[in-house]
Image (cartoon, rainbow, N blue to C red; front, side):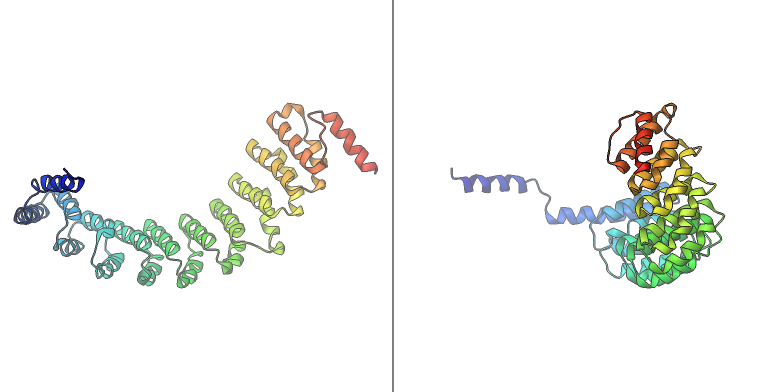
Length: 328
């Protein structure tokens, strides 16, 4: 038997088990009726099963039925349909989804905002900007995330205005967005937020400024945060010095070698080595104490970077070398 005859027999064998078209149509019809029955139930669990089954169904009526569920009395059903919006095949469904941004339920509004970001639906920008003033913080945060995904020019003005929000948690989210989008006009207001009483705001402002990029003349208020009362802010300032490698960081970084947080001590020592200015050497030698353990090893590593010589872990050898350097 020739190979093509074998293949032909194989397909005939497979199709002999396939349902005839009329049988498939009957199954689809019964499936739709079963789903309609589930959706008409008083039980949320049963209706939920109906929605899930409808989303998986391949039927001409599916999108129409799902769109109808966006007006359901139960917000949980509306939210389910919104979250499954990527399954919609009807392009007109996008307009209905945009309307869901004004749903009476906050969970639905937040889900709709996330979906707009996932779909990159630029027609939703105006509605999303409006959500930046929503009374529920989860909705405002979802709107910010969506605007980041959309990268719409009109969103920048709204985000800049949102920096004045009295809610610290939301303000932090807005700051992250401005940093991620690298909005240069945000630099001045972000510098002003370095004095905000909310520690997370100060920390995120530093991170955003370094992501956007600042001029050398704008670095001093960031460097000043090396002496901040909160360790998360000091940590962000150390990272900023690591990025900028500005010599003005040396003295305040040297003070951090005595910080109460050991990881900040080590990070300050490493950053002094990265900045690479010899002005840091006296401060490092002053802190070079064998009793400091891991910090001692970090100081030695930074001294090697700054000096270009290697005196191992011998503190006295390093001191003698530096004294000799001073006499040159």
